[in-house]
Image (cartoon, rainbow, N blue to C red; front, side, top):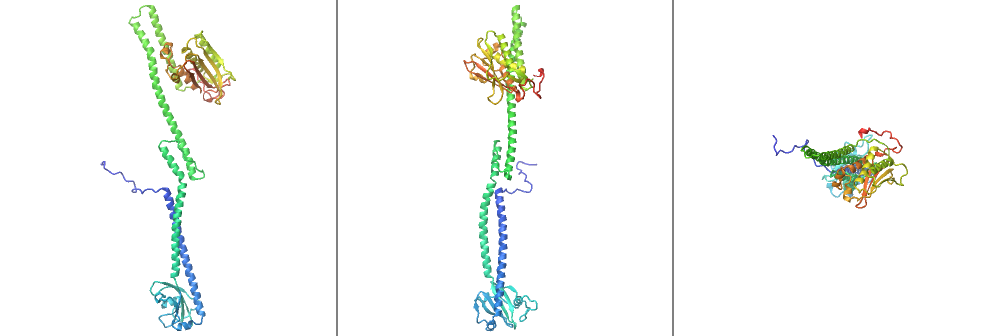
Length: 530
């Protein structure tokens, strides 16, 4: 049974050693390889130089030996017993048959530094098994051997030649001079090697640091992205290098990640906004439906309780109930219309002549209010018939709602003008529809919210007029469904102008909208689906 004090499990293989940074690993590896190369080069150079010096000394000794043999006074020198001994770096001696000690002709002052010659050494250097014997047939001449001094502190290279009468002439060279040369060479190699390693370490560190700088940028970018900044990108490098290709691949991956994240954020924001709109919509719809339902129920209770006695009062009561029912029906119809638009149901797309639609709306307005001046105006900017690809019934509803809004919220004598023009300033081909009135206008705060659902600048007057507060919301939704936009220009005391811009090619830029026919591939649903 485990307790709270149990230690965490140890990873397999024991604790891992701390990881060394890549730049240090690369520089250390470089220095290690160069150090091995320097050591190998030094050993090879020292060995070759030592072999060369020994070979040169051997040749010099053999040459000296041959010169002594050619001289005729060597026998006298040997017989004098070394009385003519000279102090010289080259060792010369005679080995007389029957004598234990050689006769030294030249060499160092100290006898302890002289080579220790015994019978075996003499036989080796003369290629002769014993004193007094001449080399046999095929003899290779005098041999060279390394012999220690009597005190063991000095080593000599010695060679000898057997002369007539059994006399052996020996020549030797001190190896200490060669060892000093080799020692000095090793010291130079060590100093030069250390200088090379230090210089190479500094240069390698700078080079590796410069080469790995893009990876440092990648690290900083990754840290910024981990902190939430998805707009960061790795500096683009040369695509011919591995780091450059890695940077390009990372930037592509980051772009896709950012796009996916932004799309997810946008989807979440839309979902939250949709949920908020739905809550507000349900609350507003409940409030708007409660008013006519309360009125109908109140009138019904009055009738049931017998509070209405005369036929005139009964008729008036029934008229009020019918009026509230009609108002509730209009509200429900508007709500259903907005629900269909929120579902983005397809439109019945056909070429629609907005001049004809505007003329019909003006005619209807004149029938409702004969005394109000309502006119249609075609701007000089029109270069062709204002035909757009759209849903005719919905476009008629847009124009009708705008004209009705002007009729309801302005005095009976205020003029209303419906004008048609063309706008090509943004590179597109759009038809512009304006509905202008000369009414009291609106305050900026009201104008900013005029397209919100159930919003009324004057709630009491709108209720008396029978408005639902959804007309302009429906206009905005229908215009957006057709790929257009609607705006309001107003100020207190100078009236209001609603401007609708619709693309001729229909929603989504469908081509062929002005050809007078429905383009191929466009879904044309039945009237019941709209």
